[in-house]
Length: 274
Image: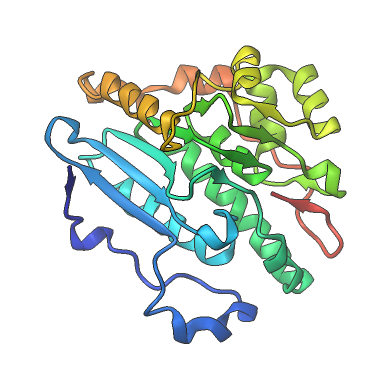
């Protein structure tokens, strides 16, 4: 069951780059690309972020990123959020990565601003005060995998496909993948996966330790979501004081230390992208 969202969680008009403002007239009638669903009943305390951009396979575009940033900013102040679960409303895909078609229409300055916003988005997810879970029921490529890596826990369908594939397109992972993948798998293996742009299915990802659990996909295409929900239910009854981010300083120091920069800040011609 879902509870109605309080007014504070209704998203305002998203930020748009100058190149995207020509579509603003349609903003009032379009379906939100990010929807927040607060579960009720025995699942109260679990909140879901539903990614819903079917025509672009949940690609990370300006509107998508803006709506997600705003949702996170509002949810982080909500003490009722005990577990935050990221899932897709688009069958067969978690997040396809950066919206390269949208990027092609940006100026060099706009690209630089957008990449910085992507990095900020992943940092916001990583710093979210409650445990975060990514339910990967389909493709999670490039920035889609970087989004999942920013979460605390990852669940994948065995048929899901994931990888930091930017090098196959002459690009670089630009939103935290070069930091978080080595923390997850170790430096040597992370370098191998990034240099080759290799794609992994859910089973392979689980064998390497990239995801916590891999489950056989069902006919509805949401097996990873159901396993992620079950995991969220396991976390829910634990003392919230112990699961809030502010009490995990030792783990943060052990796994990340001080945040380091991605390969250079975007400048004209910089290939960083997610």
